[in-house]
Length: 363
Image (cartoon, rainbow, N blue to C red):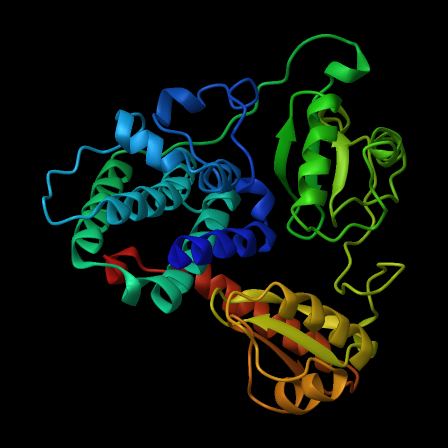
């Protein structure tokens, strides 16, 4: 149906949202040693997308596999499918919040993505959802919240033994927030993940193909200056021993060199109003326009206008239009001005982490 197609598009947007890599593929229990002791039903964006593509939800419900027994004579077959899709999306965030300790970086990433999903749900899905689906979904949310109230976990990684380079664990490190956002048990797993990210539409500093991805990752693991998808890919042993250096992560996409613009050169900022995500800076209208064009092409809702640079400048940059909650705005370039904006945004992020997202208000 059209609604399921829209949810599929929303999942693609969530995959590309900040730290979407955390939820893109299943957690490897060989790396997170006690994950399955805590999480009884693993779920991730990639699995949900694949099930939608293959029509697996229909078979699951018919065969009673991974399906909830819904004692509701008023629900149609399509409503039951919709409920199971929505339940799986909520399950992704429940697992993250259940396993990780409240307040840690992983937990906050889960909160941000949950807030983003709930905003998408409210804007694009809720009014097109039957009352029975809403009731069962709300019951599921409440049961998840109750389970989390009695659990407070810290995430651990388990590194596989062996000295062979292909068996060494690889960490994906975010230099902005100074945390590991993902870890793979081997270089082979990391290569597979890099291609998944590339095929999912993530922007990359290098051109990745099936033929060259192994060599590109090898270079990134050996060269401290090389970034892939805006992250440093480092052998976990090197990370733990501090045997690495960091290159500052880019603030702007659409820049061939992907170097971070100097503060005084920032003229345009991008902000996600739905989730309160941090700003991204651009040094010119052209680089901001390129970012806008990419966002417009992937928009969930159709965007009016002809899509040229004048449309971007008049209606978005100097107007008040947005794309799925994303806005672009000009900033002054006086000395210190950009630093003030970033400081203000960090304060907003701190407030967001401490109370902007409230489950009680959503349930």
